[in-house]
Length: 452
Image (cartoon, rainbow, N blue to C red; front, side, top):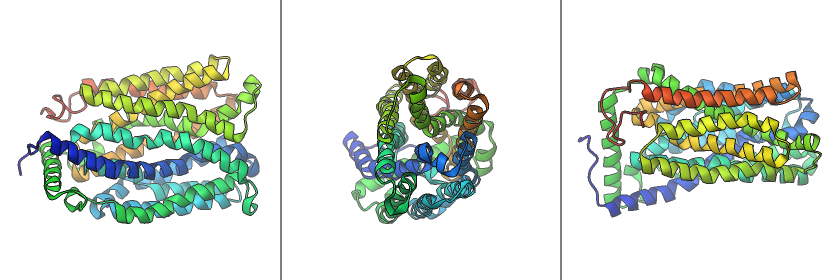
């Protein structure tokens, strides 16, 4: 097979990409919306759950972070299973198990059971997000991948834009229903969609373009041939065997960059509701649970718009590394500034800048590893990057909670969050200057993988 993608009339390419994006991106975004909400709604539950279960900030941080223990251990084998058995079956299996565990969180009697179920939730969800990223490489040519990944990742801020007020509404108005506290009803209600969507996933997703009855025969042939040619070209240039994709320093460098971005993301997700609730003490304000949810949603709403624009800008300019490094450095530098502001509006403005920086980093970042990883190596490498990066999901809430308990405030924690993100941005620039994985030029960018 030729390593050169087959030529196609521009209208055919546009039509195929449009069909694929309309078919897959909204549905995948919905799945990730539910996934991210079930993973992070514990941050909103904390507002009343901590008193009921007797949790300190450190204990809450531990409960939040334990999700990532099982998640990290099973991420790579889960993604390899998806590559072998197909996305449709494996993603449906993941969703059923995580939905059951997420709903069971409604019935935890004490902190110990909260720890156990958060760990099991991570085991159940392992492989979902890297599986989604891998699945996009099965369907989207490289030229369109960053933009479409950005649209898929909109599910993260949208889950907070919609999920925070929704969680507040459930906690406030379903309190006492079936004899359960509001936070318990929130876990129960928000866990059920994953179970229902698992059955839809089984019938809706298609594993590969060659199997897509919803594409015309010439569209199937062109798309599959294009993706196969790009994969063969990448493999011939970089030839990353499975073992190398798990051990190469560049993969581990990308893992830390992602660690830095996700460190900020989860610190924001788990503790922003607490920070907003704390405005009552700092600035003599009073917000209901629903109002707190609406305030928490604002930075995510603005960041979602910025993320789409930034991904388009990266595709248009064909530049990647600065599009990762710059927003991460800006987010890192902005984070501690919030400590010295004297109004809730100013604090939320700086938090919004931080959110914009984090979310602008994510879609462009995921372009980088797919320029030199294919097949099983892509499955393993992407899973490893996501696994190491998401270990920050354990460290960020635990360290933030520990520093909050130890110092009586968020000052030390905010400096740590900002410093980690800024270092991640600097590392992206260092990797840009390092020798590429191979001497060949990346035909999709006109530069070696990882370079601008």
